[in-house]
Length: 307
Image (cartoon, rainbow, N blue to C red; front, side, top):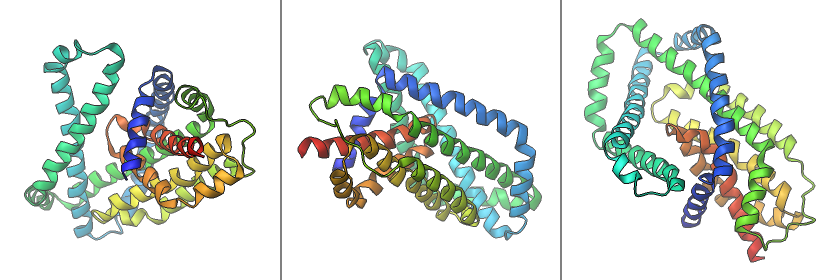
């Protein structure tokens, strides 16, 4: 895990480079706008589908899951509001001392810190907050709770489609920003003549199809508190795991490198889980697939530099 943290810190440094940041924002923001537009157009149909599924779920489970979703919403809003307050009140005198290139580091570090602090606050007060929300949901009629959960489930569907499309686009546009980082961080590592026989395009298609299938099959688990978080985390990590490893190896690994690295499944899973966790963080979630690609890249290049 210590090595994974090292790859994560290197990836933060890389993502804050203007060339990479420009690409990340240039892909992530327009894609988010596209899915917001599609969500606006097909929102009623999505809510109708999720409402139908919810009608099959016992009210006690819907109520418990509703409490968890409301807790997550409270955490999400608390992170954004506290970040806005800190930036407005404390940010200006602090940012004056920073160089222009470190503004983005301030944003990332502050969001990560606030996310961890508010998560800890809610966890320490879990029983009190959860009990009050449960009481509130009990007072509401079933239709009101069901409608609220159906709305949140529809948001979940469109959000997952956004993550999937972002994952696919970055997989195809990976070479420019990875090559740029290689020339800066690993100029002496020889990758000429490398290239494994396995094609990552097939892996992308396979994993994307299975991700959609597993999301459908595991949809009932989303109504089980706590289990739904772990189920979603597993799906995102599984999506990043094999495809991003293979897509990076297809550029910089020979067959011997690939076979040796492929046996380190624990490291690959750890990196993928680390990146998947970022999908839960507001604003930073746009960069989650970039982090997955970059962390695997640093791991592979470090292996090649040693060998």
